Image 1 (spheres, rainbow, N blue to C red):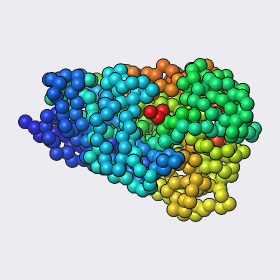
Image 2: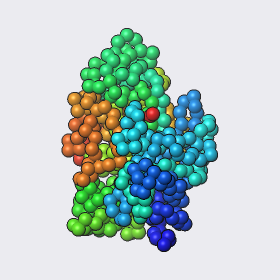
Image 3: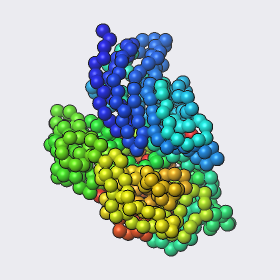
Image 4: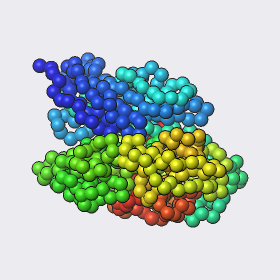
Length: 530
């Protein structure tokens, strides 16, 4: 008998619901928001079993609604998008990543769907190179909120050994992204910041092309900065070729949702203290939030293998995931292993230092000592209103004077996008946005990037996550820096009292491979464009 057997539960940027194949199930769904993006009304429809019972070619359509605010598209420059991926489990077992087809999806009116393969440069294969997610974005120039109804993604469930009549839980996740187009850019700004790259124009996607001559944006021109060692592969992501980056830094709500899809052993490795005890903080010690990190063990796991359940509880009232509980605050206390695991799980990849600088200054001539918003001056934010709320904002006394923007506050992380929601926002300076509209590249948490300072960083080839972690909850990409020592990584856009380290070209802490959990460390993932 077909019936509705499971109610939905709220997740940040996702919905989980249980359903039966071959059955029409009326689903009660909840809107969920993270950084103004929401997924709702998930169902599975259009099951196709013409290939035969339990055949590898059988598929169904994962159907949902998707919305977010302040979307834009300018074909002459760039656009924002949602990176959408799907997880499933059979009969309450472990969560798995859905292998999607590269075609056959149904886009909502006004939108485009691009499939994201594990290896974008290779041919699609449902088992060896499936689509592990899709980019959804506006199909015409314009600005404004989007609300895409009845999006459908083709899931080749048969290729993953899922039976035609399986009982499933399904989650759909969505992350706001920004497209950074192909083109030349400057790395370094010609100044003398600590460890900064010598000004070079990156004018080719071949990362092993030696710099020479005179670049159009200053310095020599080539595939890597003057004076550096060439990467081991021409495919080292040097920023010239197009890529997508997360619009915001990883939030505490997003990390909570990630933890809630892991097995007990995986969770234990991605947390700071025992998850056998409810009330323990996940990424810090003790039972109270530290430096505004409020991710907590809501329901303890056990040694029988039952996973823990995590929630956000910044106000410590034991009522989880309220609008005041800080799930929109940038996630700090992320080790390199934590960040890398999240990127593998979400089918993204790490950002390189050169991609960091292009994301900030775009195609413009560099400005000496500039910050991500394109000027070399700034103010400090002294306070916030609605602290910890989903609408946390800068205090009413915030002003823009002489082209100076406010960026950091109180040595603690802030809600992602906090400056872009300022009522007096008039552009990059007041919003703190980069040339392409990416938020908090200077300020909020520091971001671990792949560097060029040693062979571990230079051996990176830009492989993407496939949505699958190992049994210990670690990433499985061999070319990414090791989770144990993080050699080949280094933080950029650091926060705190050292304002020099916030500047786009600053590499002051680049030799510090932060493998441990630190109050300042977070990050964001990227993905090469098709």
